View (cartoon, rainbow, N blue to C red):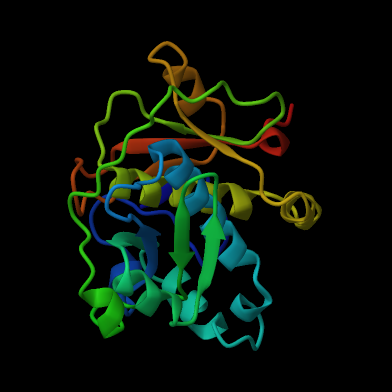
Length: 241
């Protein structure tokens, strides 16, 4: 994952070719979505819940200063900002909930986010969960985003599994968080991190990518080509004159 513009010195943008972040130990942010047999969450709700889960973790006091997750978060931000979404049900979900993390609940979705772990050091109860083939649908088309609501716009030209799209929505939310001022972050957090995830229309997408908004450019590890722009993070506070 990469982004424009660069949000902070510790999270340098991904560039083509070599990148000093590749020399750092690689960490990943695990997210687990609950998908019970016969009662899967709606796709858009899962994407929005995953994005909010990332924001809640970034804002959590345990992720800052001397907090118990702070070192892991710093290590993660110093390397590639990877997120991996796995799925669980039944006893798998109960074991995942027993591990340190935060569970976010949407209208139909439950997503648990965990502090970053080394790329090759997943807890065994998370490592054995399936990551591929997470497919979800919306029973009804999502309603239009509300006026003034932060929107994570998905690229209409890309096909992504639900798991991949959840990770990309999380990237977009994180880039918006980084781009905001402390005051704007506080206001968003106190409001409960309202946001929407929608697929942009083909006509609107070019304007979103040239509006100076944070853009997610995928590293190409799975599903889509390296450098593909997947999400435009459209927070009202970032549309400054």
